[in-house]
Length: 56
Image (cartoon, rainbow, N blue to C red; front, side, top):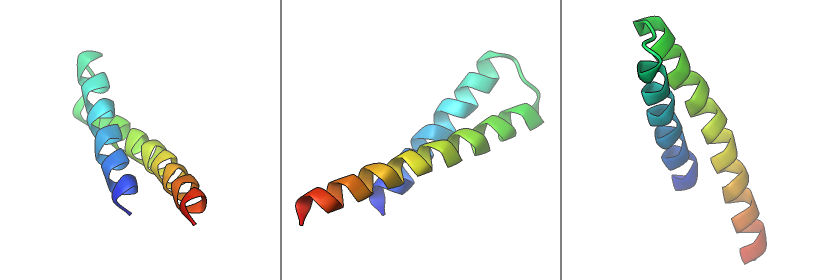
């Protein structure tokens, strides 16, 4: 569970920085944060499943 949350926070931060560097409006920044958070949460879930499958 920690990987998913960590990846989601990291992805949201990357999305926010990316949108603000491109001088997006507030709605653009929020959209980028949400999109990148979901994408990175899915990646974190995959990493966690792979690690748990290889441990046991």
